[in-house]
Amino acid sequence: MKTVAVVGTQWGDEGKGKIVDLLAADADVIVRFQGGNNAAHTLVVDGEKFVLRLVPAGALHPNKTCVIGNGTVVDPIALIAEIDDLKKRRGLRGDFLKLSYEAHIVFPYHRAIDRMREARAGKRAIGTTGFGIGPAYEDKMSRAGLRFDDLVNFKSFADKLKRTVADKNAYLKAVLKGKPISATEILEAMRRVRRRLMPYLCDTGEFLAEAIAAGKRILFEGAHGTMLDIDHGTYPFVTSSNCIASAAFGGTGLGPGTLEAVLGISKAYTTRVGAGPFPTEIKGWLADALREEGVEFGSATGRPRRIGWFDAVLARFAARVNGMWALALTKLDVLTGIDPIRICVAYQYKGKRYETMPPGRHAMETAKPIFEEMPGWTEAIGEARSLGQLPANARAYIERIGELAGIPIAIVSVGADRAATIVVTNPFA
Ligand code: IMP
Image: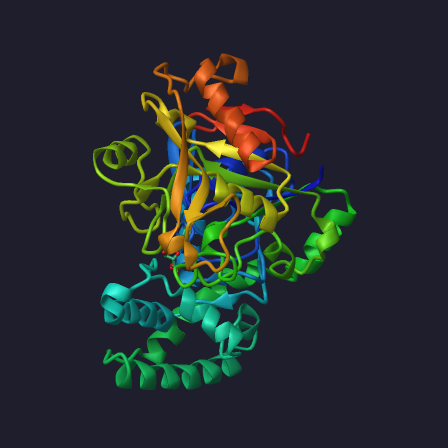
């Protein structure tokens, strides 16, 4: 296959960065199509850790082209810092990155509004990353946003920005009781942004269409996860973009026929950060132990992640909404020593058993998981490079997950390093 999308099937943090980095070895172009620097894709290459928030996780391979598509919202200061860090540590080609003219810019007022709204919401807070993602997408949809193509003519950009800042300040002051933002300071910073980022600006839709026509391999890198999708996730405890595979089309300027396979990524258990329903959540010492073992602290914000058992209802739901071809199971090694291991096979809701998501996402707030138990294993599995090298109970666990999700398991990750992976089927092979 030549065009493959990687998407999260849970609430983000499934280990997409590692899988994208792994598959990027066989791709020519790696493209982000939604989200912003609220994503944090962690990769460990030769023992060295990288956290990529905006630059696609293909950047750690030489001679790949990374694309940030029109469906993203980009904090330009964060992007420049990331490019500089990558250049310093990896010595990238000058033209390794293409940034869509149509991507929306995240400004300091978006961050200020995000944080102040969360503070004001108190107990009703969503637990956002505070990076201004929701307010930036809001401006995009209400047609008040500024895009990178606005930067081409700086004079008209400055006029638009000043008008926007005046509106935002009125809102910040009157509603959020906050301090005003200085348009002059933003404009000064944006002069540097313009100088630094103009060379990367590109008609990325056209670039991708030409790459596909030339037979290049394209990897679409989803951010966040299906349950954080603005339409299909646990609304309102979601992010502000569509995170499912179909967002790859609107978010790049390509049509549905251009995608050959969708690989869903799932942890061998479940985590989520921020508030919202989480039917299989574990509380107490076991959650603490798994959090420590799996280093389950947000890469974007450092917040401790909530921990739960694998949820097959979510997996089946994700398989449907993403049209998944296969599943990649990550962090299997974290479950070593846990016995028994529980899998949620269905939900109990209003006296009825549901194998699929109960109607109305609010049902998840009260749905009770129905668990099945499987025996664990105690052997270290970090060195396994084929399914046959895993303990029988670990193999049985993987098989059961595949059976419950209704799709094959293509990849199993047994450690943070790129090499600590069992590739059953490589979608690019
Ligand atoms: P926002 O995307 O910053 O607006 O945050 C909305 C919700 O999505 C919060 O619960 C965040 O913790 C969550 N979220 C956003 N991006 C990610 C991610 O990449 N991993 C995990 N959670 C995320």
